[in-house]
Length: 77
Image (cartoon, rainbow, N blue to C red; front, side):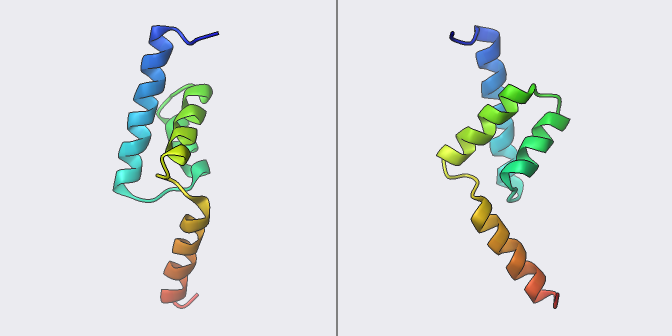
């Protein structure tokens, strides 16, 4: 079953919102999904947006983890 036009618009808005969030700072997939849910996107639209960001290589949890490790190492942790 194909999503209705309203659902398609909602999915697209979630995707654009996710891209905007990622343009400001790196996020893990879980963090991105949580932030989308906090903005009151339905769970399916948030999951769709996260998956689209993965497909577009806009999120990479491994790279994000490595970034955190380097950041903490520079701070002496």
